[in-house]
Amino acid sequence: MLLSTTIVENGIDIPNANTIIINSAHNFGLSDLHQMRGRVGRGNRKAFCYLLAPPLAALPTESRRRLEALENFSDLGSGINIAMQDLDIRGAGNLLGSEQSGFISDLGYETYQKILNEAMAELKSEERIVKSEEFAAARPSAKPTGIPEGNSCDPSVASDQRSSASLFTLHSSLWVADCTLESDLEMYFPDQYVPKDSERMLLYRELDNMRNDKELEAYRQRLIDRFGPIPDVAEELIRVVPLRRYGKELGCEKIMLKQGRMFLYFVSNPNSPFYQSEAFGNVINYATANVRRCNLRETSAQRLSTNGAQENGKRSMVVTDVPTVQEALSVMKSIAAE
Image 1 (cartoon, rainbow, N blue to C red):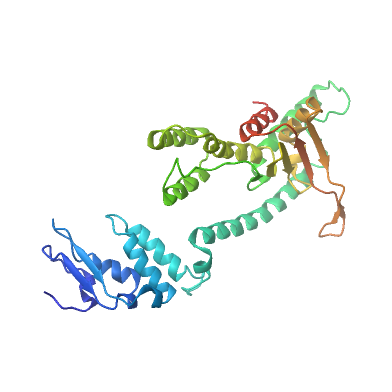
Image 2 (cartoon, one colour):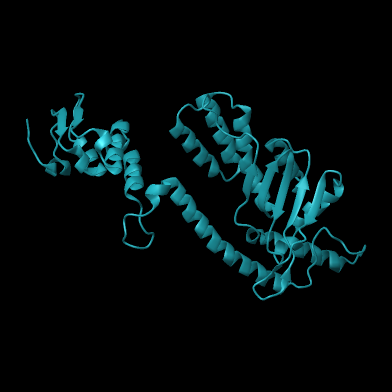
């Protein structure tokens, strides 16, 4: 038997040792406990780690969470989960400062990351609006593609319209930073399909990072290989990824699917080059060809801009008979003329 302080966590290696008893375990940090636990079981013998502490109900919240984390993550290779729990418990602190503890303990690490990404996207969006206004000001005579004035057959005019459309297409990245989705439809991975909560969270996160159809198809095949045929509600969730991508390409800041209708909310900046682009021309063409189903509108509310001038409200379009994400995706492909 070896009686020691926490010095053993620094790397002592005794392959035959298979039992460690940690007294007053609630007073140690999570990383300390993880390192000390790793001093046993380094050979081919099954190892045991006993943590001596008061009843969990009598411990502070952080101490209890540390012990529970150590108990829950005991498999080989679970160090990353221990590290994430430690970060969640102690807090990530300030992004640029030296303070360690922050409000992440109240929000959770995933929510903290989401808020940080949204703040960065907002800063980029402000820069994008400035660039789009400068771009629009540089071409004051450009007309919206898809809204012809007269039947001019002048080749120079047609050439100028084509080059203008091409130019605005190249600047489509200036339209929206992201396209959000609101819906009252059922879209999720059922518990019966993916039983583990942690596994579902990883799948949701991976799905949110899909960038193209090739990645999405590979993701779908992995689901089938691991869990079997994909249920309808999960397929609807997977279709959200290309739906949002089409929405971004068509200048939609938000898509809403509710009560069998699809609402498309376009770029809020009225000076955006999007309204003189080929993409908006496709929107107008689709609305014109489907007048019984579509309603392209502009809110009558007005507001004052930063320089005191009046600006019109947001432009949007309502499409009826859209009961599923699959139908919404079909409509977006039709608008994009694919």
